[in-house]
Length: 271
Image (cartoon, rainbow, N blue to C red; front, side):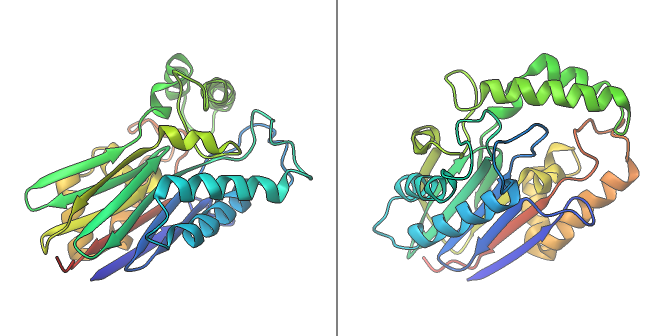
């Protein structure tokens, strides 16, 4: 079994708000949600992603614990760690998307909550598990932000308005669901399982790495092929090249020139 991992911060000198664990039993990719407002938390998004990630890995490592239960318990434990110092009811309290894939002999289980993508290739067939509910919120504010080039005052103001609209839709019916302080959000995660074969390929990507597809640079089948042939580092390098060629986001509309990017690729399964 082969497990390949790469993670790269979006900006030099800034913390990587992604977090990753990957081995032959469990993959966990967390994508901390960018904070553009006050959060009510003294720790921040990077701390939250790291604490939630390490806690859910500890809990999910046992096959006897269902992945939704592991994530719900991890959310509760991390909330307990900072409820005495931070306002967990603050609308901007730190949050993170998460993708989990757990491998057992002959099969795998998965969970996706928030904007992390999990792709399972079975021969010529692909199962793409992507939670796009956040990208469907704040449509008017998102369109306004896309009108402005990165670095302009208009972009900054529009992104703040978009963030407020997104936070109003976070973890409420009709909005989107993401890990923060309430374990009940796990009820809205995308979950499933499947058998694996020697042909099975699995990738888990934060949205910064998934730009290889969402910017139109590659199709999902081609992205899996690149991951198999050259690995996650080269996939992220392709994204970075495109971002560098369009620093103001006038060709490929996006909120940040470069985003934190994490990709995990797994193959070589024994049925």
